Image (cartoon, rainbow, N blue to C red; front, side, top):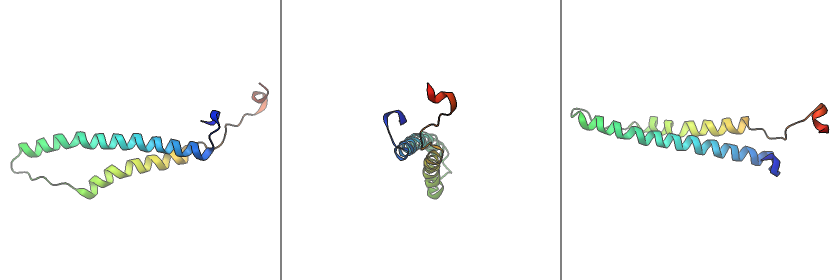
Length: 90
């Protein structure tokens, strides 16, 4: 992105958005794929009742994307790469 003139702020925002999208999509797909086996297990055992732990489920869905966004913003390079010595003259 630096090659096309994107500022450091733009590069950090795009990196954070990509990280949030990828981790968010993975989290939702994992949640959806886990609900099926859980429903089958509860349906198979008559003595079990369906109970959804909403606070824990909300934490599992929200925390990983937020951590990915914060980490991506913090680790993304804002400035242009610095060249030194003979690399500049090429």
